[in-house]
Length: 212
Image 1 (tube, rainbow, N blue to C red):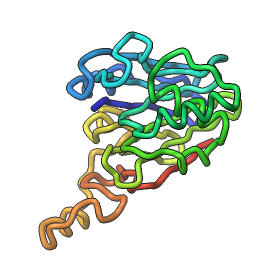
Image 2 (cartoon, one colour):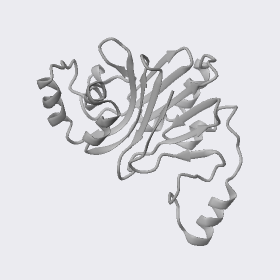
Image 3 (cartoon, rainbow, N blue to C red):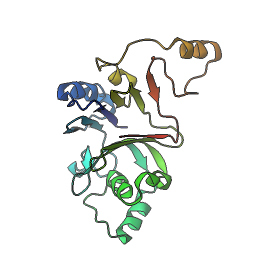
Image 4 (cartoon, helix red, strand yellow):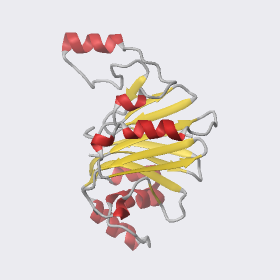
């Protein structure tokens, strides 16, 4: 279990480093082994790591491709990463680590968004493609790993847990009463992309989104 968080300011404003630091730190229980950040103008990514595959510092996140044009924060495990790694090696890719994180990056370089069809596992991740100024966010097909976000057209804030998103001063702190009523009356939860907090949504299982 790791913790991921990020802020994309679509108005072009630089990301507040201290703010993203707070969003990421509140997830420390999800990843006690390491903390890392990536900042580039209006995008910021944060990660709390629980080491599972490749316990060395080579697994530090956010992780990038060779020319640092693609960055990822990732929580989960790709069960078939060795098979995908072998396939990508045949295509000429070279690997610096033994992590499944690097496999996701190379898979994105090779197949773009179609790489999602290749992954067998449990995951939630965000990839920043700096060349195309594109953010790709995705969740595994069974929704094992959480991915929550807030988007109002000006800012996009995401995290592994809602409490991190609520730390952002521009995110409203209002209850989503219809969803709360559904839960109390029907005892159902996670049946839509809505959450108990108005404006904060979740990626549904097997869902992904792209922001430019």
